Length: 286
Image 1 (spheres, one colour):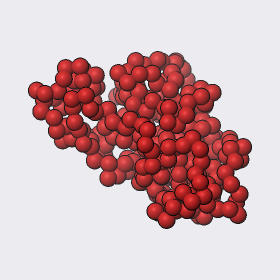
Image 2: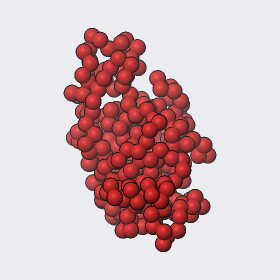
Image 3: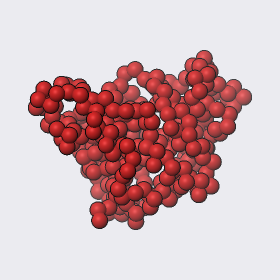
Image 4: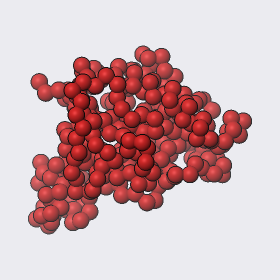
């Protein structure tokens, strides 16, 4: 039986996975340009892992500058069927304290400058994003986090902002009024692209601060964020390794067939170059 291949995208503070064996670094060419860095491929007892630092080694890429399309394309090309995204977030709710883990189930988009689809250039597809995170992965990681003794929140709305600046106080209060639970700068595009690529996707959102709505907690300072993130990195590593044995070898979730009825372009009108570039996604449906 083929081994499971799990992708891990590391955010601020997470630049590798401990315990990997047979480690190799792989550069992947994509039709969308360069990935954030080389993929670190290795094995753990329960799965093969493909790790990518979202902001590059040394954290040199802004959230807006991340080439999300290349990163997800590369994961697909390496055979990844599940992606675990680790991300630092600000809390918009008193009950989500710094150091807590949230498994979001919804998004609000406040970005404006980022490509977030593989399609275009002569082919149109509309995938469902009503539930943007894989329900099976969310259940697995909630159980794993609870077993680790983490203060974990099983659901919540992730508001994705453009950044790189943190929110104004007025914005922070506005987002709270919309019902958002956490705020970050990266995961929405990954989730959209993973769905188009028929890859299961889950976010481990690590609360590092209270954003700026909670004046009693003080305004967001990057030094405080980094200090909490350093503690959370070990937590994320433990939760991921605990969850791996329970990720199924075969998928039964809707993510695996998200493109089945999504391509609306007449097949004979799809340009050859686009057909070739996207064959890794759409080839089986053409």
